[in-house]
Length: 316
Image 1 (cartoon, rainbow, N blue to C red):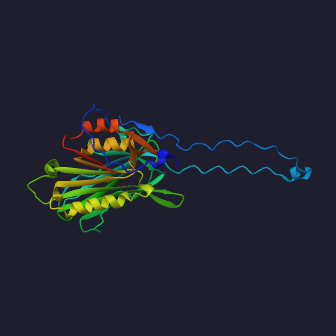
Image 2: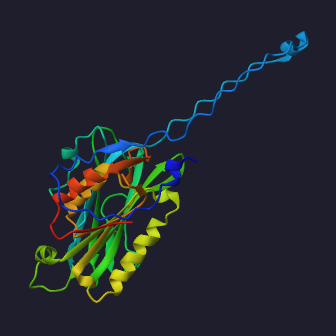
Image 3: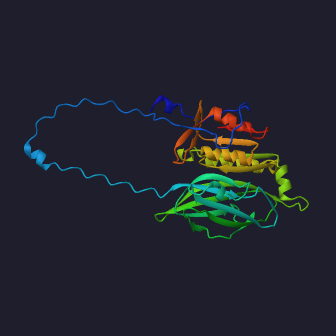
């Protein structure tokens, strides 16, 4: 293992607010160079003369079989799940999936919907999950849970959510891919929902008064860092806090550079918690091929300039 690989570690850094503003596509990713050098060439020794019958018995090795093409392709996700809901009033949540051949503006649900890159197959499932098993929310699928993903158009899911208790509770958006008789989860988003029981205040008014919004972003969760467990511990601590009603908590895993910038620009969080790998040059996000790529410190500093002035950044 080379010195560059040995220095890879989890990274903690606080960023200031100096820098120029940039749009949500200006987070430049630097491909990681090939750190593994090729072994030195070996000098060949002269081949001794072999008996003629040896050459007669040698047969060419069969060509290796070509690997099967991947069932996955790069796609788009757009979803709208409100931060605040009214007690006992159904809310229609919308999720859309499409390939990259569909223009982003065509898949967009609304001006406040969240857009992200995602790996898709020809058939996908979308579910909203209440981990309380129906105690906090009543969930009814309006669309079929499992649908085909066609080219040149988006596929849409409509899910009705009815809050059953006042307070702050979590919903999970689970997106699964189906291929070769298998099912694989490709996206699991945890989102905190504030349920309002005050009929004199609208959900929109309460959403504007929420003081702190936490976004947990994680990359390379397959490396054994147990990022899901880390996110759950944060959520549990928030739920036990006497100030829990002042916070909303959202998690996104396997974050790409585009996901990172767009999520922060749209969610406008007060606290950003990033978990993954990094070094002195920046943090490692994930590209569309699920390979690590470096987001530089300078690009990150510029991104945070245009966020709310009260943000606190924590990189671990």
